[in-house]
Image (cartoon, rainbow over all chains, first blue to last red; front, top):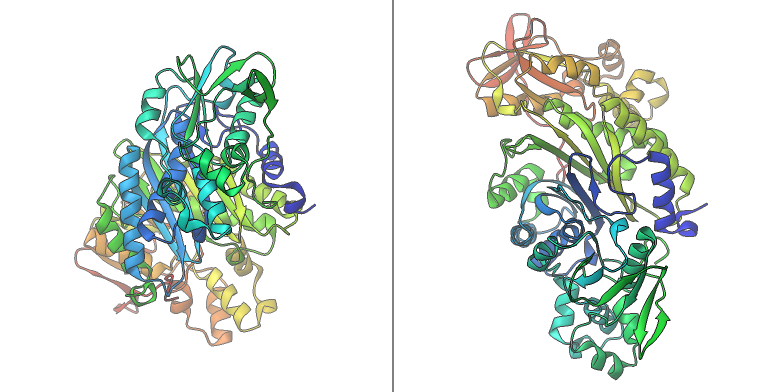
Length: 295
Length: 295
């Protein structure tokens, strides 16, 4: 059985079953939380997935890690950043990368506390913080409403525009979403007060909502997709499906929280599944999101 | 200025100068220690540097990270393990890898608490623990003696033997040192009681001792190299320099501690530099060790 036959999530499931459960967080939570409240999130990937701009790439490396901590209700304290780089790389690039990373770490509420260098072309990031009240994915309750710390679909639109060579006509806010994602730190900090569950949308909103629904054993009804203002017109112009662009890609790195909020883009009910409410009707929202090995 | 012009250590120095100092550990310590005693060590590298045997590769990934924590006086609590793997890789390989990692994590006193999967061919590992008394590299004092939690030179001998195609005649203990390094956890835990400074020997004993001497502003005199019993004869047979094999390579991943020990392989004096005592004479020990980008 090869990894491509299983896909990232089934591989992780099997690895997790092998290792047992060491903390209060489930293995479905991207952020580990120990019984003492230590919270750690790690991410790694190829450097060429980030922005070509070194400063933006540094910022994104921190942002994509911080979003997992923030969605769990954790203020990041320390980031540890490992880079594998070609020996021919200019030091000036590394300097700009770390300056970007340092800026983003500060915005997230923490700082870069260590790192490692090696040869190659990958990044690896560990974010550490503490929490007394982890917002786990299994904690949504019927009656909750869901809020999102940003918009979804912008990064997907920019990526699609790049692939189809119409990147120049793409609004700056979409390019920005792809190269410089904003987890919405200030929004998250306010949301933590009421939230009881959270998850970031790095693999697409559809996957996020299906995971929250599955783990909390609830039904989620999306009343209005939290898309950027200009996305519907942009999708229509290019013949792209708005719901697909907004829910089945990822890389927006904002956070969804569930709790007794007054407003919100979705409501939580008894039942199961994830639906889109449209003209009074409930349309099932497909689950598929981005996944390593079978992408 | 390219990375290969600077070398790993000067690149790290410059990055550190940029970022400022967030904890009680210096930037020269591989293990970060916060003011509250949180200790984190991270490592990353290409998977093909590890053993071809998946179980051993899993063990080594944990061991090479645990040695940094152990040398700082920290019992590892949690490990977070990220793998980038080709999609064609067999799941059975991944399973054996994690079984090895889990065994080694237990030996080190901790467990694997999380991970991430991606496409590629690298590993990345973060080890986390807590300490009230970090053994920093700047803490050696004149009058101390130094102890080592294992032997040095075995991994180098195995690597040289591989390169020169005499691997079959290489003693099993050397092969073992290369594929399955043993940080000497039990030894470390006992040594912590007396130790005030520590560092692992991942980049070679010469580099380790020079760093300890430089940061503590002391002189180190090696009275007897802590080599495996069969290394002198093996080096002589193959025309290799024993001192070089024992001190200028790395990958043994044992720990050196400095403190008021009764025994030990080296003594700490006022002054500076690192010397080898031979027949009453002090011979300077060259500093060079293994370094990324200019390896």
